[in-house]
Image 1: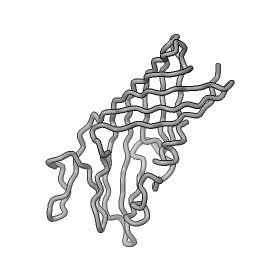
Image 2: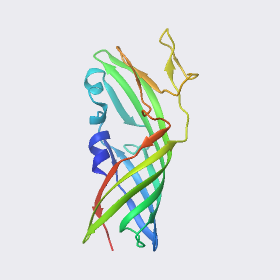
Image 3: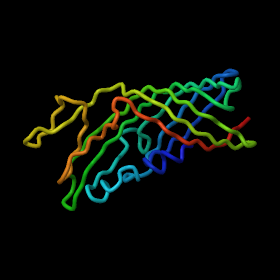
Image 4: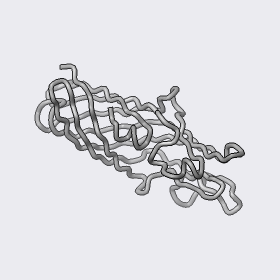
Length: 189
């Protein structure tokens, strides 16, 4: 599991990975949405009422698929390069004391490359990774001067509004995304 993204984003990834060849492993990671108001939203959750919700199957907004190439010559040991595909659907809402202000659905669909390392201590594992991914879908939403939402925006933004502001839900280097992660787990071999 990835406790870093769980604590910061409220998204718990349970990584299921198997070595399929000496230097190759395949990964399936369902993502569970565990909180509507994660730490990463900062004061926007309390001051602006910004929340996140799963637009997938119950509390599972989506999944990540990956193929790992183990640089030390043995799957699930040492350093790796992993090609990934992420597909997850979220719904964001803003509220105030009078009810819902705005709502926006967003699908994250990204291809990425991760570099990391995994260390084993008997049946227990700990590892970390850093990666870069690229957004495959072009979702846009902005507001005109009269406050009407539109999708024909001049720049790539995905805005949700509150009573006092508009927030862009895309990353600061969109369409690229940094993918940090921590992995703790148990191995069955």
